[in-house]
Image (cartoon, rainbow, N blue to C red; front, top):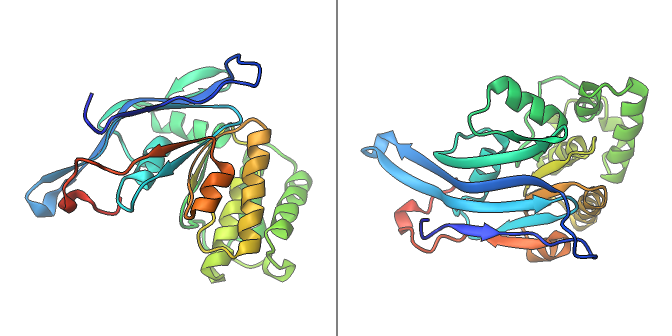
Length: 256
């Protein structure tokens, strides 16, 4: 295994019996080829192996450019890995995401794998309330049920009611991020990926996000996250994976 390879194993229950593993990554690698720079190949992820169990949160740490966001995007299927395996527990059985068809990936995203990206990307001119409700409606919730849950989250995240009918593209960065978070926590995800969910937030809203993360853990979700500040990491982490590259050149330390 390459020098950068790391293996992280999560803990057991209080009684010592194994908890349910919900996501398992083995020997995962990801490269980028810079075609405008004579085909230079960047080895961003090298032989990563870890698993996360229900009710646990694995926090990714390391300097900017270490590949933390790249790992989350690869787990979500936005990037194709160069090698390795990504398996998730989907509807009671293991599903391999590496090599899965687009239809299979979309089905896993709809029911099993949630993701809070750094930036909110939604259809223009759709109201904030509808943006937040969408994951629940896609799962077959009634509009009344979805609206009740969405309004609860928007209130908790201090989005004024006068903004709910407006498209989030008109909002500030912090307001857009809170819409992004409300949408992500709209339904219970077995596996949830969090890419700096507390960035751009004030202390009060940051605390709400940490509470939502804790509630997701209590409900049995397996979480993998990047958190901007040490206090947030320590508040939510059961384990940490230090992704700081120790054998890459300065040229390779790009934002990924």
